[in-house]
Image (cartoon, rainbow, N blue to C red; front, side):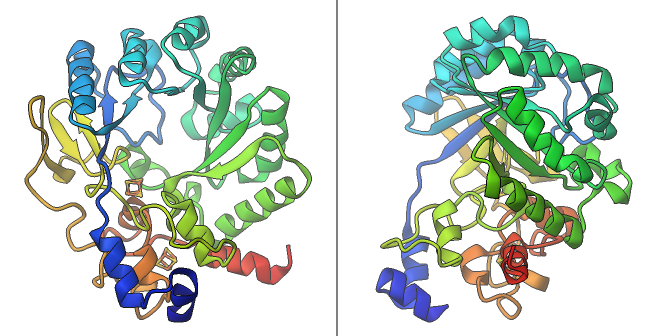
Length: 365
Ligand code: SF4
Ligand code: SF4
């Protein structure tokens, strides 16, 4: 590892880590706009209560931009309160996430607000598979109608939670996504957070399931260019940081790896719900993870550190420096995946994609 750092950056490992520590990143603030949801999925990460003051969020977004922050919007379900759509114009954001069930009549309004990419939740290529996780098989046809119509004007990304029961249909799902016009399928790793904590164990991917997921992706991407298959941050190492990840795998030689190198939650990435600031937009169901307050005058006001004990030499298990040569670079990646599996923000996730890819390469796939 030391040699590769020297080769790629010209710095010693200590100099390189220090340079990364010194970097100042522009804060990115995700405004979770809790207007409620019309699906109530059993795996939802968010604490959905509804009743957000949409106009107040609009003022906070404008202020955040004036303070120089990057902003992102994450409404629970925009179609529940279509006033959220005008926030996209305020935030100058072009990516909107929806469950797609009631979204079709709102597509024109979304386009007019500047939205050009839609993330739509779909968890399988048929109603039964889609409903295995959220019990909402009856929503399938309406979601598909939304995707078909949207794909003529928007870039459509399907957001697909991979779990133990839909994994056998993944290959079909990729082909179905192509037929209905999706440009991308983003695979989301189901973690035991929020409502998903109550799901039976066989829903969560084991090491072997995760390896099988990678095999399915490799089989598809070997032969097909569309849709693009991507992985959400919840899969683990450095998925906020593609440059570092590629560099780790020796596939790219950058002067210095780009990106955050570790979970940015609470460092340069924050979620605001009402007046409360959280470290991660996927972990707003636990009040213990409130880090501070949002202030419309001064912005983010932190009162405590993110992920106490995590992200450092104190990592334990598979991600500890003694167990993984990438530990100081990767620091265990997504802390939520580690917390969900080990109950400890300093712990390790259930599996590591970096190591799974090594296994896959060793198979010669
Ligand atoms: S085992 Fe290593 S590469 Fe994998 S997530 Fe942990 S620290 Fe990162
Ligand atoms: S905990 Fe995971 S999902 Fe949350 S900010 Fe960190 S990497 Fe992203």
